[in-house]
Image (cartoon, rainbow, N blue to C red; front, side, top):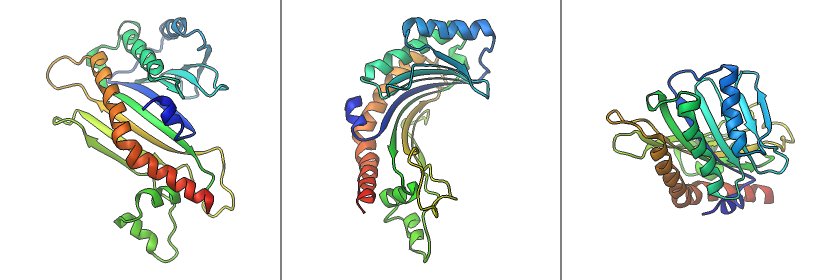
Length: 253
């Protein structure tokens, strides 16, 4: 599947990478600015730089066109992603650049990496009760769904997340989560906010092996390929399609 194929199924599509570190990352002014300036040199349209209230740093493109790049530097995490990418290559090359830069610009060695994440995420805008959508799509004929048979019961807290091992040593893991944005205090309201979306994300996480040197770039390429394959073969037919079909039914009712 192509990014356009995914975008046709949802309102926004994301391809993200996250490097989780054992030690805190550098915060010196010169180091932080040099890192982001090097990224901007590669992608000149990334000219929005700011510091969040929690002291995370972010460099991104303008969000007005709907497709944009972003990179963040947090206390113990480096994030990189593209929103609504026109191609997987667009996201792949950016993430690869970050992996090539962090060893010598942020002193992140293979020993410092706690885990490496590749995430494909999708947003589905729905103005109704998100929890009801998720419950109907995934829990109808399960013991959890049976809770809704209780007289007066209503779905107000359905945001499932499941982690599975994808390798025999459990160092490669897959995580699927569907997040409701409906507050448990909101279902009784006549109208819900229309700017929130149900979020579905699938992450392939790799922990360094207990024996041998961890190669982040090699792992990144393998994880990226695995994430694409599992999204197309498992996540879309078993999670995305039931979700979109249920949303469509709710809108028609």
